[in-house]
Structures are given as C-alpha cells and as structure tokens.
Length: 340
Image (spheres, one colour):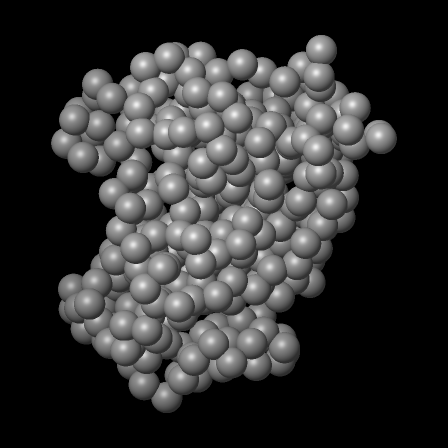
C-alpha cells in the first residue's frame, strides 16, 4: 500500500517527527488532496506549545494548497485534478445557532485543520469539501499558501476594523504583509509597527506601500482610525488604545495572546472598542480570494522542504522570517517515491 509522508507532533513541547502512514481515503463530504505547499503559521506554534486545544498526535498545518486526488460521496462542485486551498476551520456542525445564523466561525462543535484533525505538513490530507476553495490562477502554489490563513484572518480583521482611512498593523509578519497591500489598494494609509530595532521589517513594510513604519514603542504622526494587532502580546492592546482616535477600534487578530494588563478606563472611553477575531467563515474566503485576484497583491515567502518543518517553526518563533514560511512536500507524493 502506498504511504504518505508527514511531520507529526506527538505532544506539546516536542519536536515534530517524520512519520509514514497509509494514504487515507475520503469519506462522505470529503476530498483527498495531494499537498503541493503548506504555509507555516503562528497558530502552528501555539499547537506545538500546547497553548490552544489540539488532539495529539496530530499533523499540523492549515495553509494548504493542493490538487484533488479523490472525491468522497455526497460532494459536488469539485473535480479530480482541481487545485484547492484548505483552511484552518476544518468542519462545523451546521446545526448550532451560530452556524444557522451565518456565524459558523463561532460554531459550538468545530474542528480545526492541523489541530483537532490532521493538517498539511504532509504529502496528503483529507479535508471537508465545504471548507475547500478554488484559488486564483494568478498565484503559484507557494505564493497562494499564506493566503489560506494569514491572508484570510488579515482580511476578516480588516473588515472588523471598519472603513477608517488610517490603519495601524502591529506585528509585521505573514498576515500583515498581505493585508497591508490590500489596504493600500483600497487607498487607505497603512502604518506598520515592528519589534524595536527591526529596521529590515520596517523597510519591508515601506516597500509594500506603508506610509509609515516604526517600532511598537513609537507614536505615528497621526491618530489612527483602527489598529490590528497580529503579535500575541497582550500589553500591545492598551498601547494601541492610546493610538486610536475617539470611536476607533483595536482588533486582536491572533488565536492566542498573553494576558492584557490593566489599563485606565480613560484610554477606552470616548467609544473606543476592542474586538477579537475568531476563525473565519466561508464567505470570508469567497470575498477575500476575489480581492486577492483583483488587488495584484504578492506574497513574500521562504520555502523549506517538508522534513525541515522544525527549522521553519524555529525561524518563525525567533522572528527571523521576512514574509511567510512555506513547506514543500517531496515530489511524487508518497514515501516510496520520496526514497526513489
């Protein structure tokens, strides 16, 4: 029987290890996808560190680009060979009040790709067809991978930020570098905040059209209409409140964040708001991929062979990446092929 290759985490705080498994078959409502590329997301670090719920052992990865190999029963709208993207939100119940009211991102019984079900740090993955999307042809497999979470969460966060003209982005990594381009395309002013002394990231932000770039301890020259925080640091929330105008919004875009310290009520007063982003809906995917195709955005990536997933995660953890890391499985797609 042909086997797939995967990088699996057995328990929190352990390194990923290479495993071989039989290639799974898709069940009803599912697709079997040959993985061409899988982005490395900060959420994968939270899975590795045990900071969010997961079922171990698990194969991480939820920014998956691949081609349909097999179609399960009761699936419509897909064909074998079609290129698809697979998302973090891997399954919803479809029956709870949130699902029935169009807020499936808040489903009471969800499953998450790469956390509660196996993900894309592998040559193959089985995915719920409802949460697979056709991708714009203008993006290569590697370039499309960061769009599947970094881009989508950034898009949802930008929509929650409102229609304000001046937008701050705190933590200029994979998500910020995508959504900054969208906001510039929308003719907004974008202000980028990086780690202290990260001149390279600040130059990168300006190269993508940001009108200002500085450290998170600096004040921009203008009050902001909204700030989106991608960095998982709770202390940035009260700092961001001091940057937004009356009625402004601070959007926390991460799935995990350290505790937010106490702050003066005066910093929140005058109808400032703090919001969080939880997962995404299928409508977010549909609308974002249309914008991605129209806006001409580009993703900046660094590729790693699948079996160097630990290296990619270490680079992400240390802040040593510009843009997004993407894992590329061995060509051929099976353990037998990988070893010649």
